[in-house]
Image (cartoon, rainbow, N blue to C red; front, side, top):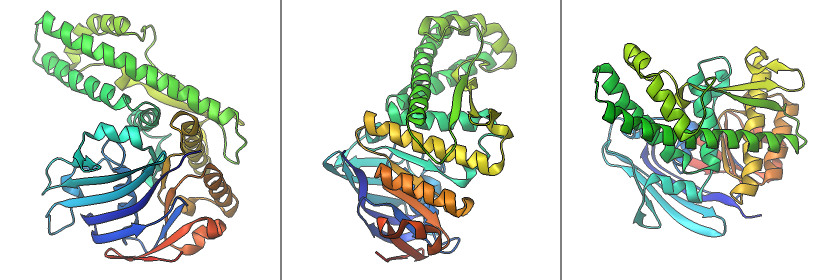
Length: 364
């Protein structure tokens, strides 16, 4: 099995880090230190080595170190499928984020061809009980890990929907312009739904064939009834709903209205009705299933970013998580306030004491 890992990461004026460097190997990476030391900022830096806006969904301008606001830069050496890539990501004084791979300017979508990065952060703990938008975003991040083209389909859909919504608000009667936009929306909607359904199948299969200490979730995508999820079907539905959308001033149906539903299989209980601990365990289970499925589709386990995950698990579940990570041979970047939270990993991990935002101590 091939490997995927970061062997060196350098941060310059990124968030709280003026200058920080981490050199590591393919083993899990444990970052520990007091609250506010900059541990999550390191995870955010790694998350930018995948397409999208990173684990905080932040603007490039907000990522610069304050109060200097001089711009920021990340450099990383990525070992991917027996190839080595030098990555450079930067923003000059809040301008659009830029990327070079092996010294050549490259669009962000190219990252999806050489890396897979998954994350679980504390803000996701309420995923099952809050609005559908967060669950769609969670599903789409997983879809993107299997289908890099999912990013382009999603961007095209969102862009054309904004244009259609503008026409709706303006009460436009230009049918030819509506037809053109709705055709683009319908084509990208079909791609989005195909990727989402295929992702759920991959996740379900990965859960069904693996013994795990974490609960298995039965997954379903809730969509509008009576819509043929093809380009032609969506185009007919958009045209049919045009008058109702014009009254509302926005598009009322489509992939942007879908929801992800999960059921704790062993108990037959909806995820939103599970305990806080069970909801967290379901999230971890899905991230691990996503990682297992990527080994066969991408060819290597993904890089995992697990922020403060150990603090919410008892010793048994924590040991089970670490065992699965090591079995996967995934480079998991994990944060915690104390070294004792990673004791079950022993020599299977490498440890970094984040003493302050400008200094990192390697412990082995």
